[in-house]
Amino acid sequence: MTAKGERKSKLLNPRIIELEGMAMAGLVRKARIVECGDNFPLKDWMRIVAELEDGSTYETGCMEPEDAKRNFMVITLYARKWGKMINTGEQE
Image 1 (cartoon, rainbow, N blue to C red):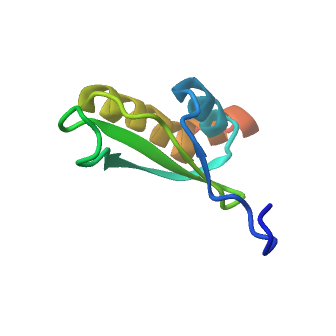
Image 2: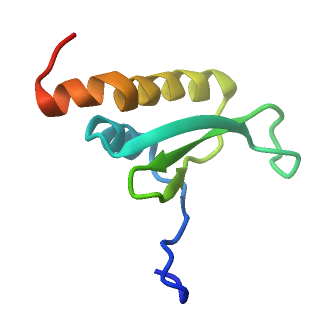
C-alpha cells in the first residue's frame, strides 16, 4: 500500500511461469504486449503487461518478440477461457 492507500501498481519482472499460474487461477483480467523501448539495448524486444483482478499490474522482463507473442497467447487463453474451465470445471 502507498501512503494514499492505493495498491502498488507494478511488481516488475515476475517470472513468466508465475504470470501463467495467476492466469490459470483466474487472477488475470487482461494482458497486452508492449515494446521495451529505446532504452533497452536489444531492438524489437517486448514484455507482457498484465492487469490483475485486484487492479494491480504485473510486467515481465523483456524477451524476444516470438517468445513474448507465444507467452501472451497462452496467458490470454488462460485468462479468457482455460482458467475459468480449470476453476469451475465447466466445458464449452
